[in-house]
Each structure stands twice: as structure tokens, then as C-alpha cells.
Length: 447
View 1 (cartoon, helix red, strand yellow):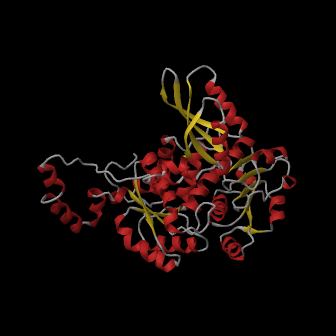
View 2 (view 1 turned 180 degrees about the horizontal axis):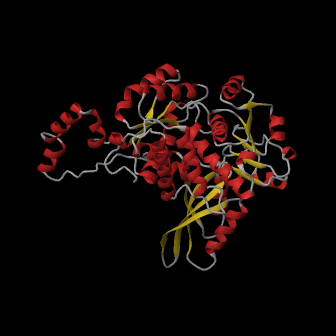
View 3 (view 1 turned 30 degrees about the vertical axis):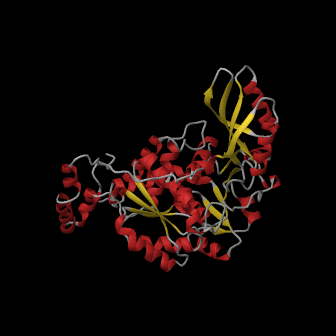
């Protein structure tokens, strides 16, 4: 798995020394990213160079190569991602400063009692007077985390913190990771229902199949707040937007395309269903798991074998977790190939293009961070009681509409993209009669 390492390097401050260091990194098969100047003195300078390497072993070899250069010292080298996680990635900060006794009287006793009474008399006021209406619970049991599999809820926490960061950075919503130490759906659902009154929405994350489908369905039925499993639906929204853009760029209407979905786990099932709902001519899927086949078939997805899907489909979407699954000899001239397994795809885009694909991309280009922040903001901004298929289709269309000609999908770091997605989702909710104006927290309505 590729790793980013930071090398803190001290070297003579004279012409050509940085170039010499960079050449040594290239000779050691490292790919340079950021270069930050720490200090510059009359004789020597210190810089931090971020380098992508294949693995930790290569990272240590590269440090030895740099140390071997005359007058160069490697003061430190470390895994950049590990370093960024020290102390955790999120924190809770107050919105109101407490600087006087009057502040204390306002936010605590005696003033807070009147607010409690207001909520007691009208529970909908909780969205007005507390953070509930603008706060999402991110719930996981860690049974299907990235490509790591079942690592448990505690080890999944760094992923949950990252999701929480995206909410704050892109939408201004609060998000709280909740680790649910239950693999059994009954126990998981009970645990979420117990804490659900504290939150305005429930984001499910990294739960294995088939339990994730049952858990989501039961929580949707039991709660009157938005519930969504991001691995299923957020990924589907981003993938559908990419499919739409490929169709547009190639001049091929989606309504005339056969979509082949290879892998019918959480992400694959969600993508297949949303492509079907978006109006693809047909969606045909494959998966060796009979339970996955039955589930997909019951939801309108045609089932065939792997070779047949590769032959029949105009657009291939692969979410199998199996690097190198698709051989170049399987590619038909003019096919669209989305090999979305991270970090190593079913087929490298360049290989697919050389084999005749008209369009190819991997999972690095199709990020579900494009979808879930705006989807939940849109739902909460109009008081929606659920997240419908129509709302998800609206999100995908908004992402596709915001994509520039040279892109597959927009930049997920652009806050305007998330606001536009949220607006499209809220508009769709209103059109379907799912909105509840009395449940919208102050300042959260988009327009």
C-alpha cells in the first residue's frame, strides 16, 4: 500500500543542494509531494519533504540513501498520516464564550431551566435550542473498514473522525463518531435507537454485508430522522455522477447503456440500484455470493456471470476488493471502465485505455466524500424525515452538473459543490413532500 513519509532534511544552504536531494529521492524511486521550508540560516537550511513510497521498508531505505549524501543529514523521517492522527482529528468547541457571571446565568442556572421547560412543552423546540438538529451521529461496528475488513469499532475510529471532519469543513454540521460494539443486527439497532434522540440524523458507516442492509432498513423504519449507510448510498451517488459524466463526454445517453456491476456488496449493490433508478437501459451484476445475488435480483438487478457481464455491458463498474481482477484481454473497444477498489483497482485506468476502453477511472477519482456531507445537509436543512431515492438522484445530478469538462467529478474540497448538492437534495425532498419546516434549526435553511 502506498505510504506518504515526511523527511526532515538539513543541508548546506547553497545552490544545487535541494536539487541534489530531489535527485536522490527520485533515484530511490520516491515520488515527491510537498516541500516545506522549516528554517534557513547563513550556512544550512532545514526542509520537510513529503514523499510517496511503496511501503515502510522502502521509506527506511530512502532515508539511508539521503543520509549517504555528503553534508546532508536526515533529522527525522516518519509516516505522515500517522503523525497527523496523533491526539485525534476532531474536538468539540463551545459556540458561546463564558466570560462573565451573566453568561453563566444565561447558559446555565437559572436561565437554562426555562429552555428545558420550553422543550418539555414542545419537543420540536429541541432543534431550535440545542445542537440536535444540526448534528449527525456516525455509527459503526468496524466490521467492513476500507480494504482492511473486520477490524472492530475501535480501530475504525480514525475513519469515523475523518468523516466527521468532512461534515464540519464542507457543511458546518456537527458530527459525532459512535463506536457500536455489536455485530448482531438486533443489538446494533437497539444501541443506535438508545442514542438517536441526541442527534438529527444517523450516518451508518463500515458495516459488513448483509447485516448493513437489515440495520439500515430497521433504523429507517424506526426513526423519523434521516438515516443513510454511506458505503451503500454515498458511494452510489458519486459513482452515478461519474457514469453520467462519462455518458455526456462520450455522447452516449444513459438510457441506452447497459451497466455492468461487478461485485454486489454494500457499494456495488447501491451503485447498481441507483443506476437502475436513474434510467439505465439495464443493469446486470455479478457476485460469487449467492446471498448477494438473491438480494440484487429482488431489487431489479439482472444476475449473470463475470465473463458475461464483461461482454454485455457498455459501462463496467467494479467494487470487488480484488486488485487485478479484470485482464486487459477482457476489455471491449469503446467500453467505459470504473475500477473502484482502493488502493489497487481491478484494472489500472491506463491499462484499460490501452486495451481499447473509451473512458477509464479508478477509486481515487470517485470519492464518496462528494456525496454524504451535502446529502445530510440537504435533508436537515428542510427537516426531511428520510433520504429518498429521489433525493440521492438529485445529489448525483448536481455533482454531474457541477463537473467541468476536463474532470470526471468535481473537486471534493470545493465547499460550493456540497452546498449545491445540499440545495438539490432539499429541493427534491420538498417536491416529494418529505420536508418539515418546523424541524429546521435556525440558520440551517438554504433558501
